[in-house]
Image (cartoon, rainbow, N blue to C red; front, side):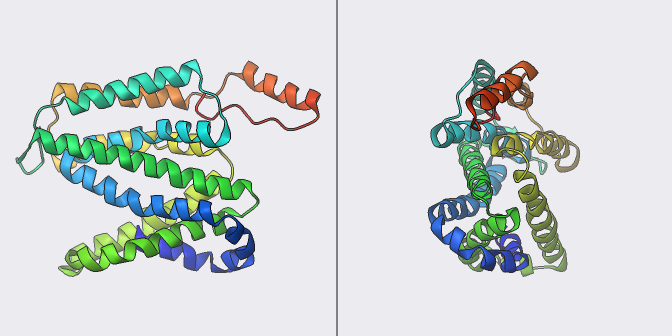
Length: 282
């Protein structure tokens, strides 16, 4: 992710230079987003290592929309709704069931102790929060008139710089074989660079809450691959918790009712000023 972030900054160098004054005026938002970018991969991949691919992904990405809604509530005054409360209750219930899960069997046949699973879930929650924070930071910069290319390049470039010391200290296995190097190059170029360029393009058109909710597909794919490819074996309680978190995402991903959207539009027209759109987590 550090290399992918630096690639984004390099590609966006002209846009960053053109909007350096605007970025400088909003340096706290850039700094918060960059710190979250640096925290996210450390927490996310550590979560998968400790709790397994399926549980680590479900918790990390499943908690992101809930964290995004909390951030939007605090920073943007977006109201909570009954639907959000139901989704949050399901998500928290699912996370609790995952914490109560017994030992998880990995693909190598090794049994992961319960304490490792609980620690992995905790790191997954930190990953979900950091994901929501840098999504909000990038979206806030874009809302303030900074192009998505410059906003994502600045946030991820600064985050990539913060990750470089980690790469120096722990990156030796990447050079241990051509296969490791090829996998590392693919991760940097495709999901971490190309994927986040497209993510920034989407943030310019939808809210941060909606963008993080759309990661639902990654959760389903990761859980299936964890079982079919990695060979993980999860107990029934873990599958139940994962299903509750996935169900909460379906609820959070539902679009706002048409009648409510029309009410906001009519209020904006009558008041002669633009009101905030319905909360993306509604």
